[in-house]
Image (cartoon, rainbow, N blue to C red; front, side, top):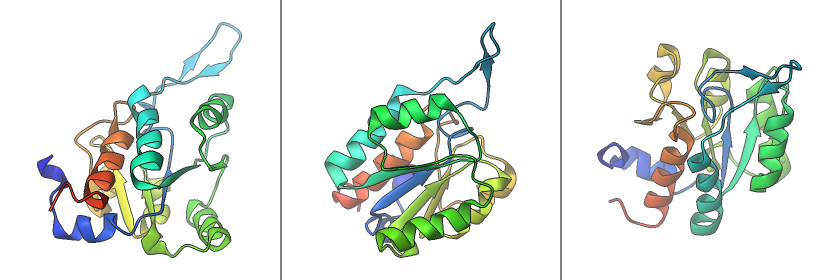
Length: 173
């Protein structure tokens, strides 16, 4: 929990109302599985899914997906978890996030984003709090406010969610 402690993180985390996330490299380990019929399959960490539920129940924060991929598995996972925003095949994540913020009446300071690769940099720079998994690319590691100790697909989203929850609920000073 030491990596949760920072005045800057606390000041940013307590303002968050919506957490947006990339999928590949954050919720997955960037690997892709193919069935014999050529269907793409993804492996998701159940801990990350619990992070969505805990954000909603313990901090009144909703979750949204903004990803460049188009995957039925992502749609199914989002539906199962009650994710409020699901945006697939996004070319310009920052523009999509701007649209979401306008529609929901949110400021950048009220939105967080977690991503792992260079196509996430614009999105990360467009929000008040940004994070990445431990195994993100160097360019992303350099700009993240919070770097999870977990790798993508192994609880990085949950770690970010728990950091936000801890600050909102006053568990970290």
